[in-house]
Image (tube, rainbow, N blue to C red; front, side, top):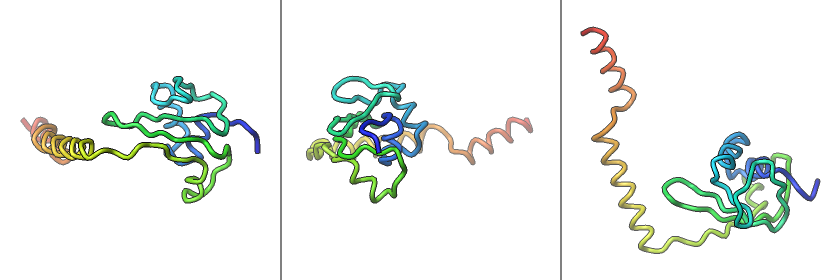
Length: 128
């Protein structure tokens, strides 16, 4: 076990991202900050580093590295690798999230067709 590990590897091992390549894309897209600075995928990560992950819809996840590993572990054990320092959402934030979900659901239902509807449209266009 070493005292440093690549950022994208640790994000994958800690189950904060599904795959290492997904973690690498997030780093390249500027979605990951370590100790307040934007971080590349090959950045060396140490115990005590604070990671801020930008999630969809303007949400953030803050974690503090407790254990540095580069070997995969069970998901239940992976949660011991970090402390989640994300503040709890306020009542206003929870209400805004609920409204956003309702808005997205309404626009999705009225706007773009789903897969089956697209197939039906494609068949109609091919016939006509």
